[in-house]
Image (cartoon, rainbow, N blue to C red; front, top):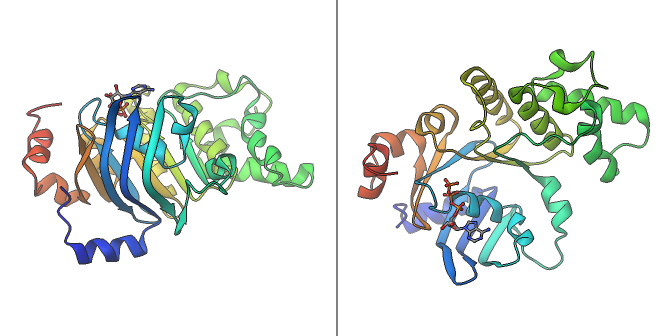
Length: 265
Ligand SMILES: Nc1ncnc2c1ncn2[C@@H]1O[C@H](COP(=O)(O)OP(=O)(O)OP(=O)(O)O)[C@@H](O)[C@H]1O
């Protein structure tokens, strides 16, 4: 049960970058996401938290139709971005995934140079007419991802030769290079050490000025540090969503309270 009143909920839906209504997700017979409604605000960070298996990643993947790639997965309900239903048959999932980029748990650079990792997307989406424009996109994406100074003299070196934290920032640069509006992050720091994690968290904080960010995290400390809004999932339900500070200091639902106080999960 979401605690927002009907009127505030309607207002939030109007201002939202992403709105989801009555979303259900099934893997075969398994009902993994149940009747989820949420309004995700633009240019802010929303954290999805909850115990393992509660559906955080499944719901995240609905937001750029990554679940389309899983045969047994079926999504019902409505999800719109800027008022456009992303499940409309007219929507090209490849274009959608450029607008709604994704960064995964394990850094996954292509086995190519640092330059090519970032240039690949703009090239296939036809975003640069000539080499100098592509160079400009690569440089500015690496700058926005806070990686430029560390790699500017080794752009031809392999992406996989970077440290884990650098590889994750390279993946963020790769997402940024196709001018997304939304960036989805699925536990982006879980494979990183505390220093690399701190860098990625700082970066997330900077990026929210220009992008709408949704992050799945197992770490409540991370959710508290990086997000303005937090959504708590439990057994496929969205139990509660609100300002991060309110969720952590004054949760409305007992299940949220039990989770944040470490009673389960
Ligand atoms: N590809 C899949 N095929 C079948 N079932 C799946 C698949 N992916 C997820 N599930 C099931 O859907 C439910 C939700 O899983 P999901 O990975 O979304 O949860 P989560 O909250 O992100 O978990 P975790 O925190 O452990 O990553 C789980 O019961 C899981 O077993």
